[in-house]
Image (cartoon, rainbow, N blue to C red; front, side, top):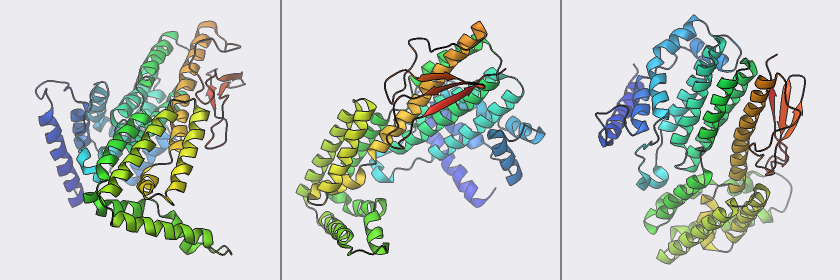
Length: 415
């Protein structure tokens, strides 16, 4: 074991002990805190011990190869890990013991490891799919969905990791559906499971609220140095562009932006209590506007959030109180679209499962969608449904305004 790996394992062990000792059911199993089991899994998880094995597992995930003896042996070694995360994923509560008082310095090393475990579950799912055990293959994907809810409601970054994990699981559920034989009972079971996990998917607005609480605690005079470091690293595109732009022009617009930025940095550096009080108020007003916009239908929400970001950027040029918000506010319209993409993808998979059920019962695909199925969230309407030679397509009726495209989802049907 290398020195660095030793340090990582010691660190994880310390976290594990801290979380375990804080659990109210230390002597019970399973504990009432899923993080206890996840951290146990982190400790015993064995990564591929060479590049060849690592590449084989990646190729298996991507459907490029079939499972071989080396891959099967690797998963057999990690069977206790898979059992731990499967059990953990079914526990309602998951408290990682994150110290939000650290503010912007909060570290979340568990995100990277949980993602690694999700990719391992995908590869293990492919082993069971190859062996014709479709239900266990689907269970691995459902475990990824359940894991995603345990990491995703805290901050925006954890929300995005959770969303990515949901997308990964749905991608492979689609592959399994295309290969498994028609089985009404298994499909109905999968539909019920998907309805359950989709009701507990990551909430972006919850993550925004949590991040806002941290940001409001950070916007204080005693944190001036930290905030200066944040604005100097988080969004300095204006300065870089002004310094490197070689396009012939008088440069007045970019030079003005550069000057305004430098003046705002100086005001932050010398800010008094009133400056920080006004900055907090401006940020709270921004969060209130975001919450209001998120309650609107997608197209209206996207337009309002775009206007909000433009307003903040413009006001930051003349209103010092807007400066920190202009750097601490993410591209919120893009995040809103990202949430619509992953939730609509979920709805498409659930709708598709209903179509597979009809095909299993009747022997043929329906000519139209039955009523009462989940909607395309971009339009608020039913998906457009089209049969083709390989199966069927579900198409959104509203446009993704960020990418300026209509999303469609193709599902293949086993002949």
